[in-house]
Length: 180
Image 1 (cartoon, rainbow, N blue to C red):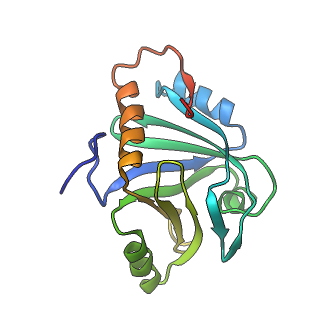
Image 2 (cartoon, helix red, strand yellow):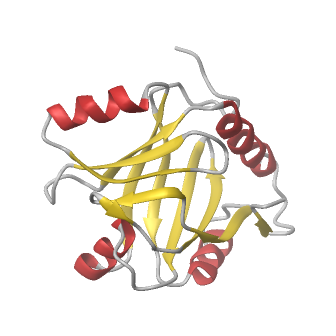
């Protein structure tokens, strides 16, 4: 099975994500207490043509990403009260684990396969690195959503750059802009 530049296999889990109420405090916790960084922060993200549970989405979130070993950790903070897959978790359970991210080379096929298993498509949108993401909801008995992340050259290049920044990171410049 082929690997991405950051060492994870195509079709495998490449990310674990957590919803937080204060992304700055959450990043500080990961930096200070867990020695994970540097973090790459995007202050506002709505997605390209976002669809939440069948309707247009207006939700805005902040996203931060950093590698812990070969696993990409994502922190997500809702910036408003618009309905979203992130707000759902906060309203139901409070902050915590949100989803597993899986690289997909056939996002439509992967969505169809999980739909056949009883999952529902909760959120889908385009992303700046090219391609799309799709969040699949398996119900409250599952440990979070499954997010399919379309495996594009842009996704691989971006995540590989984050991975390389984490290798041998000396603690300097712990929070960086995702925009560059």
